[in-house]
Amino acid sequence: MRKNTGETMNLDQIWMDEKKLIPAVIQDKNTKDILMLGYMNKESFCKTLESYKVTFFSRSRQKLWTKGETSGNYLIYYSHEFDCDEDTILVQATNEGPTCHLETYSCFGPQPFSLQKLEKIIKSRVDLPESNSYTNELSIKGNKEIAKKIAEEANELAISSVTNDGRILDEAADLLFHVQVLLVTNDYSLSDVEDVLEKRNKSQ
Image (cartoon, rainbow, N blue to C red):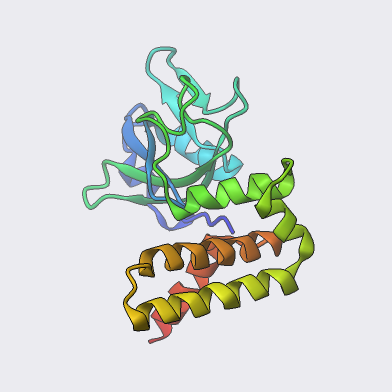
């Protein structure tokens, strides 16, 4: 769920000069990779909070610029934080397509491999099935078959850890993959699991 934390900030104090530009670092809320750097004035920041689409002030064109207004690759706003001096903004967002005009995941290059990237791959196989796709076939079979595979992989991981056969990492990878297939098939994501863990951590 998106959250807007702007109402707690004294924007008039931060932007005493309406023309003041503050660097805004855009971070993928799921992977924590840096997507790009832009600049915001008070007006573009407020528009970001209102529209939930990250909006900058273009220094070259001297006007507001919503990322994706031409390409359709919007940055969907989730939350933000100001640094300790209140002169830099860290914006959490998700990208709808490549962030960079060079068609890369971020302005700093391709997306590094991660569980979040694997989640996107699994989702694409489930939503747009390819022929002979193991992931799609397993998803179609449903929770019962996926659960069998999870139990099988968990058992193999347990045996590997006890026998010390050198396959702990391989078996752990197999288990995590099948858990992610279960999550995607049931319209859940890794961030949903993280939310549960975060709530548990706060309660301790």
